[in-house]
Image (cartoon, rainbow, N blue to C red; front, side):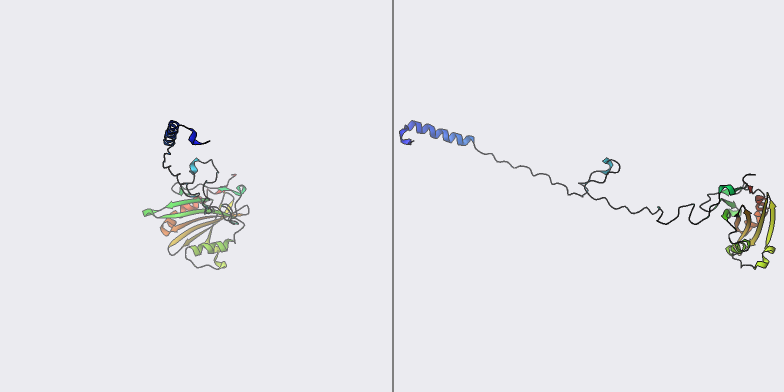
Length: 229
């Protein structure tokens, strides 16, 4: 179609409409905000609060740190307390005793059947231990010399053994008693065979306490008896 056929007025109207339409379509520019930076996986910000996770759920957003093995846990091949290569005396072989009232009971530990602190003058103390092991544990001679070494005394010959012992027969027991005065500490010891076991009663400490407790130690041994009596 030729524009020459339209009147001049018509051309003017069309021109005005074109100009008005362009103004209505004017584009408005705006600056869009940038997206917030995403936290890097594994970083503290990107990890979930472990308190909000159910029990046993692995940490989110990273690899959990390796936890070192508990130092208190037993190592492979190690024996738990009550084992450790230490023979255990059975309940059927138990014996009882009555300690003097001034002896202070303390925890037995892994080996002892009984354990007491024996107080002396000026805050000094001696230690009373009760232990038991199957068999004769090397025999009377070996154990007396072991105790002698603990207080700094030289071993004796086997021919001297009987002269170093006292004997006490009580409640069906034949008890061997030894008194050892060392250079710094002294010792009162008693060995009690019973039902294939050997029980050891040992009071060790400053010489003044051992001397003072000597009669009381023998009285204590007279209270020792089989549990069924």
